[in-house]
Length: 109
Length: 114
Image (cartoon, rainbow over all chains, first blue to last red; front, side, top):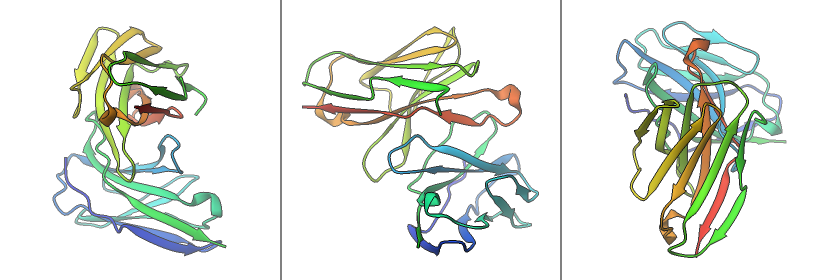
């Protein structure tokens, strides 16, 4: 599975959009981009995933660049409860998840 | 997610003791996983099972064993616990038939080996 690079930490003001970047320059054509988050010591929670097209669900939007070498997770209106570690994972479908260190997002009041 | 439960939630034990962590799920998923997480690090896969008759080693299986007693139950055992197995342990399930192979995690078991 392709390696991902994420910033160690980010801050965001409450009510504003949180944009979390992820670089995956070695991604191959059959690898998906997944995002999970982990709120302090709880089990990780699935957020969204995509292959080529941008995706949106009730939690977030995923923007994948045309060359697929990077992506951005967007939380449109961040709340204090969105404070968590966000993991960007690139993998082939049916393969195991490999969690890196992720990005610690802190939403500030 | 209440659909995936883990017992116990916290456990303190001594070096050399045998420990079993249990995971149950009501999601009807075929696939189950055990991960461990050390402070400040991401999760690492210990074992996984794609169905009752299937067991596979993950990234860090040494010192651990598992049992898939039924579709809904997947247990992790530490045969002889050692201090560096002190960690947060998560069970997860997934169902490829959903088309996403999304994993759903339990609340975790905090294990301390003295």
